[in-house]
Each structure stands twice: as structure tokens, then as C-alpha cells.
Image (cartoon, rainbow, N blue to C red; front, side, top):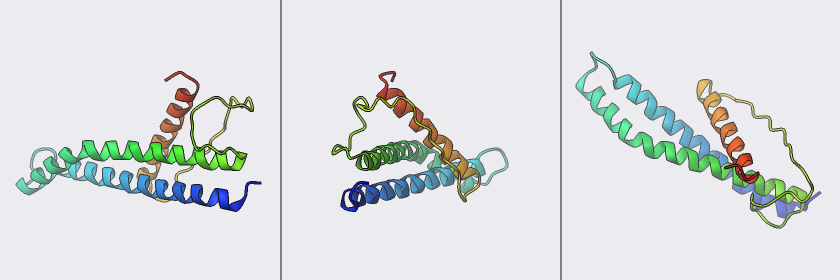
Length: 137
């Protein structure tokens, strides 16, 4: 088992990354809700203006969500590296132990559809990371 001192900073980084990803997901969901509420005919001028402002911010929020998700994956790789005794926090390189398959279970917690969307996005990021590490992306 790795020393607690080696795990603590990596777990702290992972927690911060998960918090950032959750905030980014909530912000994006809120913006999408505002866009939906102000779209369509029969909406008031204020609702349409709010929807337009939210639509303008949606791209940045989506990018933040993707960046935060990548940070979660990188932080998780760091924790796994510490558990395995690797000194590096990098996700790059071949696995010297010959591991070629990993089972990842991600469950949506509280949050309803937003939690399920986040889980889907997180899984997509893991798949992308796996493809990149295998040289396929």
C-alpha cells in the first residue's frame, strides 16, 4: 500500500477537480435551461434577451466542462499512479505491467438527469483518454 503522504495531495487534487467539474456541469445545465425557457414564440422580451445572453455564454461553459472533465481524468490517473507506486502523475506512456483492460463503473448520484448527463460525459472522456493512450486518438 502506498504511503498516505503520497496519496493525500493527489486525492486533494482529485476532489478539487471533481468539484470543478460538478460546478461546470451545473453552470452549463443552468445556461441550457435559460436558453430553453427563452426560446420559441410567445416569450417575453426579457426572457428572449436572457436566452440570448445564456446562448453566448454556453460555448465557454461547454469548454470549461470539457476542461474540468479532462482534469478529473488526469487527477484520477495520478491517484492510480500513487496507488501503484508510480512517481509520475502523467497519463502518458505504456503500461509496463501489461494491463490492457480496465473496468470503470460510474454511477449517477443525486441530481437526476443532470447527474446522468455528467456521468455520460465523464464516460466519454474516459473512452477518449483510453483511445489516446492506446495511440488511437
